Length: 344
Image (tube, rainbow, N blue to C red; front, side, top):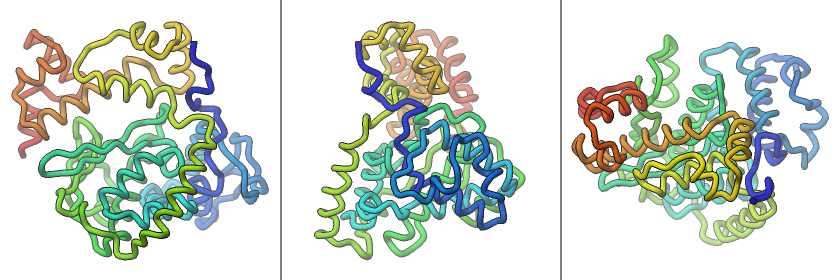
């Protein structure tokens, strides 16, 4: 059986307080939020945050986010947080982004260094002939913080691209929720290429923009940052949560439909332990499997132009009625309405 140390769990203290949490705390304090109320229930004290090696668990960070969202109670909070997150002030990891050869390499490094740069919501890249897509994978179950973090994450990547190439880029955003009444915040911070009620939340950019070289890139500083970042990552107890590892495994399996016990066996866990570990991290096997199939279906329709029958075959659903029901459950749309939505 695999050791718990194989994966990060929601109580692993690996998130440096001076990184993303500091950005959130600084935003809240700047708006007059009392630090005691902000930290309530997190097990943290303000003095702890000033120490260089203080680390939070994902559970503590999520509690901090809960408190901040409630206390700030402002439509622009997630977007202002996002502007502070990337490239950030995270030492070597931030320098690794700033000195990438191209924007694409910076996005690849954002994904590979997600434990340092985006510990709760891990970006996942997908490329086709015309676009680069950035999907978002929950490291742990985010609950009511999910949309807040997606807004912050997408704003952060938008800001990162602008910082690196010196101009605003024509990102398009597919957002998996109805248009909120604060849509003007999206216009200000992300632009007007917005599609709400999307089957899967992602952002995409034409490929010609991601080959651009950052304006201030340095090959020597990039090598130094790469070595330092590698050492930091090697010092972590693990690089992924179990839910991330399960997502990656199921995604690499393609459309093959596998059961929970079979996947538990792959990770050398008993079915009961596997289920308990995922539940402790705020998620479950079926939820992860649905996320994989929803993303895969969208990629097949959007990137490869597959027909309904081809997508159904890839997901190993032979009956058209069952495929329609599956797609409706995964994306909220029937096969025909999903294709119309993607083409419109």
